[in-house]
Structure formats: structure tokens, C-alpha cells
Length: 228
Image (cartoon, rainbow, N blue to C red; front, side):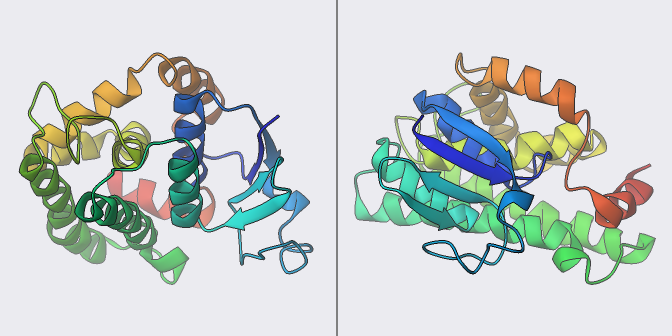
């Protein structure tokens, strides 16, 4: 066993890490976040505020924060771009994903969505985010039927992008039209990544368990109320 991943039984942030682990063929065990959070969250090596937590069995150390875990695994498993610019853009892509997760949950449920605030977010902020991803990909050779986010080969940026938008449109099919309108190249990239031999069976199996689940709790109830 190479790793242990601690997360809730929902896709949200955990699926980013799982897609990467599946792609590289790493052996890992998926465990409930409650085994660490909240009682042990300050007691582990390299403590983190909340899940996901990744335990590297060989190193015997924990890592927290989804973007940090993604960059750590990408370095270890050679899914990181070589050049300084594209390495930086890979990190930016993951951080952008994390920002979108924060924003779509209305800052971890600080307030529940109402019609006015949701539509302002969906048709302005979220569409702008989609266009940012599209522009980044197009600037680095992404085409509707081929290519990747940051060059000629798959990187952690592609995995993160698929985890973000693939999960989002599967959980909320109404948002697929938004993605196709604002980022058609990204929509196609997501489908190609999700169809990769190491990833497709995993997603099929996990989605049987998750259904259309996304982030859970009252936050997800609030999202579903706005999206019908």
C-alpha cells in the first residue's frame, strides 16, 4: 500500500486526489475523514485543519490541503510540467479549482444560496472561471478534439480540471450547458480524461455509490434548490 486517503464518502475535494492516484496506478486505501477529523487533526505530523489528508506509507508522514497534496503527488509521479512557467500554471490551475469549490459552496455555507445570489454567481463569476480555464488551455495548444491544458502531455492540471468540472456537471447536469457555452475545449478535455483506461472504471464504480452527490449537507441542498 502506497498511501492512505482520508475523506468523506463524497467526491468534492477527495476526487481530485483519487483521480491522480488512479491515473498513476498507486495503491491506496480510502478511509473516513472521521478517523482523523476533528479529534486528531492537530496531532498528526504536518497537521491540517480538515480533510482531505494523505498519508504516505513509505515516508510515514501526513499531508493536508488538496492543492498541496496534488502538487506533492504530481512531483512524485511525474505529472508536473518541466518548465517554470507551466509548473507555475499547474499550481495556479489547482488553486483556481480550490477557489471555485469555495465559491460554489458560498464560502463553506456562510450563507445558503438564494435565487438572486446564485444567478449572479452562475452567470458572471462561474462563467468567467470557465473562460479562464478555456483561455489557458487554448493558449497552450488545447483543441476541441485533442491536446492538454499545458502542453503536449497529460499533467496534474488536466487531472484537476477533470475532477472539478467533471464532478460538477455530473452532479448538476444543468451546468453542462454552461460549460459547453463558455469552455467547449475544457468540456471535451474533461470527457477525454474521464475516459482514460485507469480513470473510467473508477468513476463508474464510485458514481454508483455517490450517485449525483457533490458536497453534502445543507450546502448541497441549497445548490440543488437553485438548479431544480
